[in-house]
Structure formats: C-alpha cells, structure tokens
Length: 129
Image (cartoon, rainbow, N blue to C red; front, side):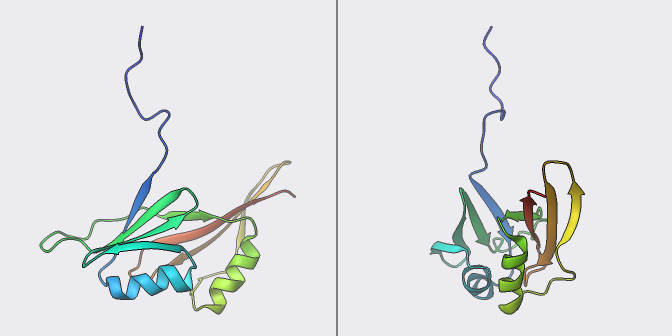
C-alpha cells in the first residue's frame, strides 16, 4: 500500500527572518555575521546562504503584521572561535557559550544572541569531549 505524502523526507530549503529595516539587516547578516549574501529583491527581501539553507531576511508587506519568528541555530564546528569573532564585530551576547548537555560521545554548547530586529539567533556546536 503506498504511503501518504508527508514531510518525512523533506529538507529545510529556506527560513524567513522578519525585520523592519532591510537596509540595516543586510550589513548585519552579511558583514557582522559573515553569511554569504546571495541577492536582494527590493524593497522587501534579501537572501543569504547558511550551509544548505537559504535565509530570507524580509520586511512584511504594508498592512501585514510582523510575524513571530522561530529561533535560528547556526551549527558551527568551533563555537568559541565563532563567538569571539562575532563579539569583535559587535554582536551582543548576553553570556559566553554554555555547555547544555553532555553524553559520553559529545557535548552540546550554545551561545544565544539577537539581531538588531530582536530575532532570536544562536550558535550551537557539538564537540567531542
């Protein structure tokens, strides 16, 4: 019997990060965070690449409320090095990277921060102990 179509084998192709000021968001995501800038579709959208996921940084259409966004976790191989670089570039982290979970095989580290529009972002790293 054929199975119903669902998202079991889907991958995330793009995430929306809502912002109010695109001119402010572009240099933040491109220069401060160092994400690969792909292109803009003025006046409301700019696109960036984060690994295999495309980020749409966009301003809601006129009359449309800015929706609540999901937290975006950027998986990096060395959280301490990336944390130091982004901090030097002006990213305000409320605290240093923290060990969240430890197993015999790995440690999960997180460092949370917000973009200028208030969206929750984080660095995450799984490190062999």
